[in-house]
Length: 480
Ligand SMILES: [Zn+2]
Image (cartoon, rainbow, N blue to C red; front, side, top):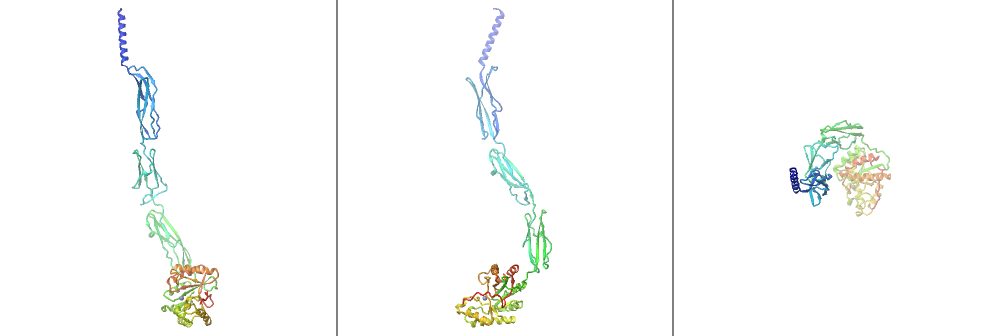
């Protein structure tokens, strides 16, 4: 063998040995490599896009040999549910296979969102607590968290905080706008239009209060004047400002007019009122006479001697033009209705008192209990019929009434007396009938209603007159 051949043979043998060794050492395997990260963090609600993986079949040494393999993917993260998901990638080539995993973590790292409701024109009064205008909180993962919001008012701010289930917290701050844009409220006692009669005083008050400053009545300035002696309209201006410069003002008109005065010379009809007062004079008669004088109202007093100390009121009443007439000296039914003699004896006793006070006897009277009374029956049957006939023959005229004030027992309330009287007058007036009103000047609550009754009457076109011999008698009718 030639030397060259020996060399070739030796090299070949060596190469074969080397190749054989390589083949023996080489390991066949499937290799999977992930696209993207091995661990992926996904925010709740985001979409998961599968990055995929690559797989090859290759040798550990004989790397030049490789074959691409198809990768099977298992597992799909649910991004609508927090959690840790595993995605499995596998590939195989004959008896060779491999598996690789990827971890996908769906998490919530987004804090909730707090939304505040706020009126751009709204404000909080200085020194007052902020009145919550509203807020809400929502979280991409937990939904509505409004109920979980805590709020704290401090140093002119409101701090709202809320935490979601994953521990993400949010905070929002509201700066409270403090202001005062409204002036004090002025209130006028008696209203913004007041009527005053000449000669009386105007003394209606006022007050002012401010939402911040409280009672500011003392700071109110009043401009304008009222002359209560001269009829006319007077305007008063009330002005006040609060500590923050808000000014309020109000005006009031004071209407001064002459006191309405009774015109007594009117022809008798539905607009005539005869005020009559029984059982006095007594402790309230002077005050009553003062009221009647003020309005030039003439009335009729059916007098008794129940309060002899006030007999002088008869003189005063007569001098003022009122009618002073007979009721009864004793007002004792058991006595006066036992016999006609008793009746006229009692009558004459009272008429003598009247004559002593006024200078003349009266031929006008009112039966105690009225002409229709039946109480007299228990003392003397038929006595009312006889007395009425005798009265006529003596030239005496008796009067009953057609408006009862109720002051003899039905009511002790001044307002009710007033209501009864004006109601009764209006009802008579509707029929064109004059009103003969029965009140008792020995009852304070009844006397106290008289001024209002007069004012109502004058304002409604009535005329007040005293009874006289030709006046409407308003007879009830005799029952005994
Ligand atoms: Zn009486």
